[in-house]
Image (cartoon, rainbow, N blue to C red; front, side):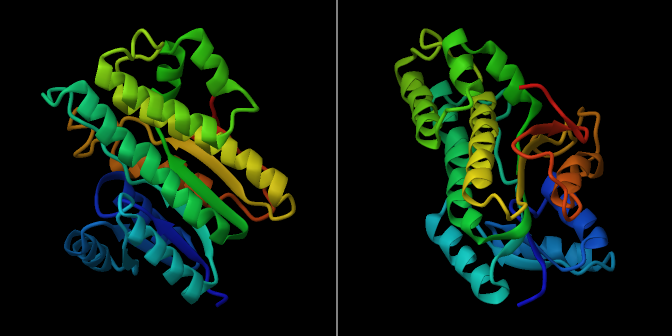
Amino acid sequence: MSEKVIVVTGGNKGIGLAIVRALCKQFQGDVYLTARDVGRGQAAVESLASEGLKPLFHQLDINDLNSITAAAAFFKEKYGGVDVLINNAGIAFKVADTAPFDVQAEVTLKTNFFATRDMLTHFLPLIKAGGRVVNVSSFVSSRTLNQCSPELQQRFRSEDITEDEVVGLMQKFVDLTKKGEHKEGGWPETAYGVSKLGLTTLSMILARRLSKERPNDGILLNACCPGWVRTDMAGPKAPKSPEEGAVTPVYLALLPPGATGPHGKFVSDKEVQPW
């Protein structure tokens, strides 16, 4: 029961795989590469094993509530909880994708915001004292925030915004796109940006809740931007390698015992960013 454990979602390729690789080298404990597809996940584990690393695999599809609850039960039973959770799984439509904007909005927010929230709902209670939670967001979230109406900006930056309110705002965006009224509603034309705006805001809300409900447990929860990284998602022209993209998520995952911050922040290049 005393073994420490890290869980990384979307770990079979791109930034997620680079995060798992770095953690296997730096973390004293078990590192779980999770992925929705068992074949791809196990292939990724085998490729790391060929490098002399020893990640473990567990199936986890964040869009499937049964998969989330099964994984949560597994980690509770085997480890008594989780020391570090890195919510890395996410999706983005290509710029050239011809899917209608309302479809892109619904699908993108379903994974990047709503499914990631489901992960947090079921895994936050499992985070052990001294634990770390890292939500991989994007610099696009702060850019999107600045493109919202003043009213929306005020709410997203507010210290008293609740989880229910941010969930309602995300759903409202999706609903407005179906009517083609999101711009009149004060929203910009970016489903990916809004999904990550929601995730960064949710991270701040949950960090405040942890400080209030578990003040002595020393848990640090942050959102971060890995940067623009060469992956299947971002394409070959991006300036950073996946290994470079993993630096900030890994830094936040391994903040030393007793550290009091950052907490409830948006972090990029290991620096707290304005919000």
